[in-house]
Image (cartoon, rainbow, N blue to C red; front, side):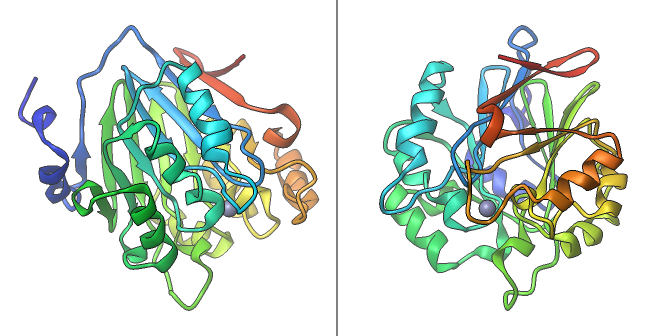
Length: 282
Ligand SMILES: [Zn+2]
């Protein structure tokens, strides 16, 4: 184990600017699996590799429904996850961070990664307090960052964000890859952020999670042609009031030959990394 592998969360923060902040020893036998959980109108993606677990977003919660307690924790337990090494929060909206406190009350979470421009955001601060997240557990992501865990590499970056616009537009961009298997995720970023981030790419990926649950204001044609995915995932609730995923978005995928899988129709979607790329599994 080299020096970087031994870094604790606190000392890891200093490496963000250098472009690498988190690393663990690969475990070649476990493989890499990605699960897009069907959490209703919201997002929660589970990435497991080499015995490590990363969540990208923590699912929605409202007064009446908490996907953290109802769906995410039971599913993680089914997967045998007893500790989450990192939760990456793309942006501080309730359909992405709402389930966090229910998760941290039941499963140990080591660290949280979130774009720096949301520091002090009232909803985020409230959720951190409720979830018992300590300052030294939070890694604020300000620019290009790389994290290795197990066999997978995570590349992250954040668009420039104007706080007078929607929280969506500052969403964390996350690319996950190993060999031929790759996946691109953009939280709820809209087309302005997408086009801005093309310049910070390349973000080419076999799978693309459609931005903002498949909203017509995300997954711009230029972005789709930059990422060039074979498959796309839409994470949206059954009969949601927003009409996600939007017919326009589905059409933009269709004309480019991109096959779309939807959590509202197909339920949880599971991918396993292979030498030929991700394959869908049960
Ligand atoms: Zn959302």
